[in-house]
Length: 315
Image (cartoon, rainbow, N blue to C red; front, side, top):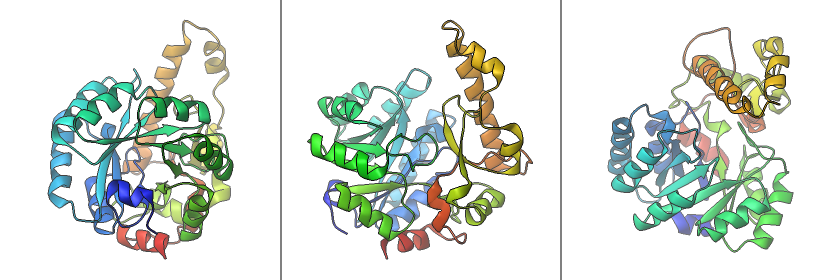
């Protein structure tokens, strides 16, 4: 399974354990590295910059040959911690940074000085060309099978479009739950894959057993899009609670979102409420079960160690 991604990150298999808000942690990434793949954690999973710094140092000590680690940065203005997080990452060092939801220009500039590779989430050719012009090391093609905030195009269409028009490598994100899925993404022109949802039901994940078990019991047909978390369509498991509250924004939010002056504040409030509900569902017992996941949980049949999940992906 050697590819340009294995060479780029000096890993054994062309797989990145995708950064997942509330789910990813150092234990998962350490086991990912020991399994020969790369692991990534959202910087926002850490409340303080000191916590982020401690996580980087823990991963540096645990790093083994054939593995790599990185962090995900939300690079738009909504992340008030962004500049501090970027500074810490560049000071401490990591193998790569994945940027999301904004311009990666400053991240690329600072990371290059620190010898850190930068991969940028994109959903179409326009943004892929933009990050290429900014000197990103690769574009992560987020397709319509991804969990959480996903793109609008199917994997084959998106990968082929980007790989034929861009000079930087393309990594595919979304729709991978087994080795056959990886083989397909590579055949379309991707140099590797970013895999998230299959790792939710890992022994190392710091989420409730109920969340993990839901990823076992539900499948691809149980994934729905909701606007009730961040104000932007996001994939969740269609639990009875999600069915009860509905997946569309309320009539009041719909009206207020049409007001240019109020739209920003409405989205911020919706995001705050949604993230709080998601955090409670992921970390403690609650009937308000809003569990983020993608259709690739179809292949999740039991809760396993990270190493066993990687083994399933490569065999």
